[in-house]
Image 1 (spheres, rainbow, N blue to C red):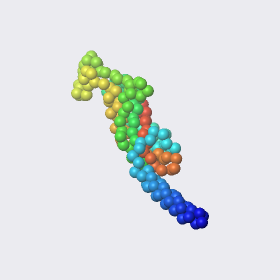
Image 2 (image 1 turned 120 degrees about the vertical axis):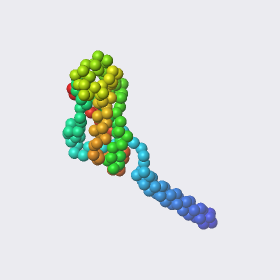
Image 3 (image 1 turned 45 degrees about the vertical axis):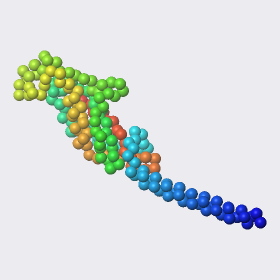
Length: 179
């Protein structure tokens, strides 16, 4: 007699467990669709974002499109600009900016034009005298050019997570200017 009394209880427990499993499965489907709406920006992924054509093509693009600032050339000033950006799921680059500090060091190091240098430049190049003044930081010119060129880049191959889903990824690209 007890078996018949427990049998409906067991059936009820089984049905509740089954219903719970279906609810979990439904939530799992929602979670995977929510992954596509995920706005997280990753620093580490299974497969990193990549410039189409690879690293060599990226450096070719940079060397073809960079216009070394004339003031930096004349003052024999160069340096490394670390440009950070996000590669979106569609490969588009967003949030493009230069890091002014990297590893505790200014990137590139500041180079301030002195009053004497500004005077010499204006005397030698009177037609371009408006470009230079005392206190001008040549590092700003390198930063502006590096950011301009990265903004001009075509779409990249997006990053992939462990499941093979396209994800947003933060990247840092060094752009080197040699005098």
